[in-house]
Every structure is written in C-alpha cells, then in structure tokens.
Image 1 (tube, rainbow, N blue to C red):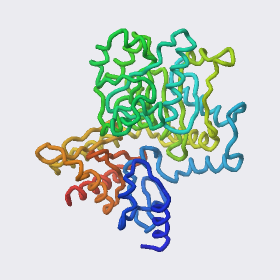
Image 2: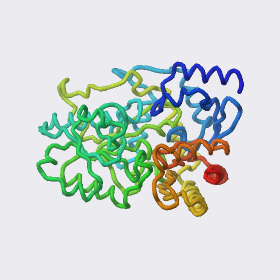
Image 3: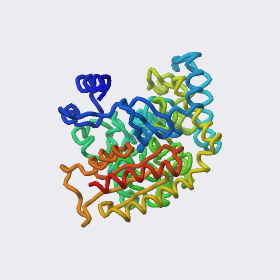
Image 4: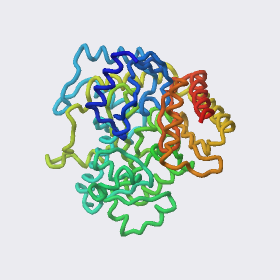
Length: 429
C-alpha cells in the first residue's frame, strides 16, 4: 500500500464517522477501506490505481457519468462568476431558469412552483411542512397526519424519518415526528375508516419501486389508482422521486410512466447529474396560492445554500445532456440488455432467489438454494459485494439484495463488465 493511502485511511479511521456504518468494523485493525480519488464515465479509481465500475451510481446519484465535460464546463463557468448568493430576498439566473425548466416537464397549470433545498430528506420535509401549513391556512387544521407505505424510506431528518416503514432506522425515535399511519398496499388503504382519513394531509410513496425495501416494484397501475383515490378523498399525493427521478425507470420521472401528476414532487440525487447536493420540491399553483397574503401565511423554511448557483448550473447542464445525448431514447435497449444479462446470471447461480428490475434499477436477492434466507450474521450480500471489487465492480447490498443501479450512460459492454464481476463473485462464494 502506498504511504499516502495509508495516511488517508489512518486519518479517516481516527476522525471520520460514516453513515449507515458499523464503525467498530470500519475502524477494526486490518480493515482497509477503498480511497476513491478519480472518476471518468462509469468508472472510478482508487488511490492504488485500481479501476471499478460504479455499480450503484455513487449512492444512486450519478446520471451521465463522472467527469462529463458539459457538466464540468457549466460548473466551472458558474464558479468563475459567483459560487453562492443568498436566495432569501434575491434571485439569480440559474434558479429562475431551472425552476422554469423543471415545471415545463409537466402540463401547463399542474406543477407550477419549485422550492429548492439541499437533499432528498429536505425535499420531503418541505413537502410535509407545506402540506400541513396548507391545511392550517385553508380551514382544515385537523388534517396534519400522513399515510406512508410499509418498508418505505424517505430520508433521515426527523419529519421525513417519521414516515419510515423500516423499523431498524427509526423505531427508537417513534412518536417524535409527524403522526403517520402505515399501509402495505392499496387494498389496505381502501379499508381505512373515514374518521382516520379526516386527519390526513397527504399520502407519501416512492413511485413504481421502493428502494431501501430491497428494490421492490409496485404492481403496474398502482400509482394511477393511488392518484384517483387521493382525488376522491381530498388528500394530497406526495411522490418521493429522489431515487426514481431523472431517467432511472425509463422515463424522466417515474410518475410519467402512469400519467400521474402529484400534488408534491420531491427531487434530489440525480437533479444535478449527481455532481452537487441539491433538491427541489415541485407543487401546484393552488397550493402556492394558499401561502399568499399576510406575512404569517408565508412559508418560513429555508437553508443557507437554497438554490446554490453551482447546483443550478449543474442541474441545467444535466437536463441539456438528456437532450444532446438522447439519454431517454437510448434507455430501452440498455434496459432490455440488462434484463437479459440478469436472467442469464440467475440461471447460472442457484443462490439468486429473485431479480427485481425497474428500468436501470435492479435488486438481486440472494438466498440459500432451498429458498431459505441466509442468517443475518453471515452478511452474505456484503461478502458478495466485497468479492466483486476484485473483479472491478463497486456496489452495496440492502441486506442480502445486491443493488445494481448503473449510470444511465453505461454502454452494453460496460453493463456486461458489471454482470461478469457479479458472476465471478457469486462463483467464488
């Protein structure tokens, strides 16, 4: 190991605290984490010069590949003018253009306003607070609760985390956030009594597929059914497209696959192409109008880096690349290629219990050949992902489901490299 790599690892283990990480294992003697230092296209390099396919798009963020010249140039151009200005009491060209561009993705008089924040969790927080304040200001103060779906994940700030359907992430904090009722499916939603629904401001869902729930797709048509149900009940529909947005499911936004327009659309991760932290919550003109008038009707929420100019520049450049490179038009062939490759992989390995795919999102669930789950202590999914590194693939599991979520720019040959790495890792298990 190079001395500089050792120095970085020692400094990290002495001072850094990593998310969702068993720190005792991370800092254990002999553990040598990868130090990632460079990226180009779908590839990442570590400090020892080894190259890896970025198999989870750097935590589901990267869209067009690392080091894309158009995004890099846009960020550099903005940096040479100004890196950050306040959005409180001021505006700037990038924010105005980006808000208009995002709203233009939807029909006129639907999603008309964009509120910018910093990440997926805060995009959800914005929607929740807006939904509750809207009810307070339109004569329905009793509607301050939410419905969320079992095993869903919507972020880690307290309000967003209170929607959590994954006990290991939020159970110890239960009761500290919003009042939330969880359901498993549309069938259960339809059975909820009227007196309970009378207190609900909104329903929150990850459209088409749940991410942290080991990449589990919803039944076809379910989102459209949910939209119709919300309309009947007078309840707002909040879509968490933090993962599914910007082409992941095959369309720019997952909701477009079923012709659904929500009351709130929460975006982050791929918004800037995965280059800078930024989020947006889109909503309707009707909701916006409820905040007009007296000063106490304003939405008192914001962050220091709201509408950061560098993030806006990256986001606008990413949307331009979608057009310049016909990203969406090229996706069907790539999605089909991945589907065929995953089917062949499953046929070769009895430990692959199930493959769940939605667009270029895939979850590969591993179990014993008899269908029994591996004991949690074995961390079998982690072991497979670690073994895949030796064959040039970086990704992470959710429990024993290996996630394969490549940048949209991946070529069929590059997808084959990722599949071959998994094949080799599983073959050595």
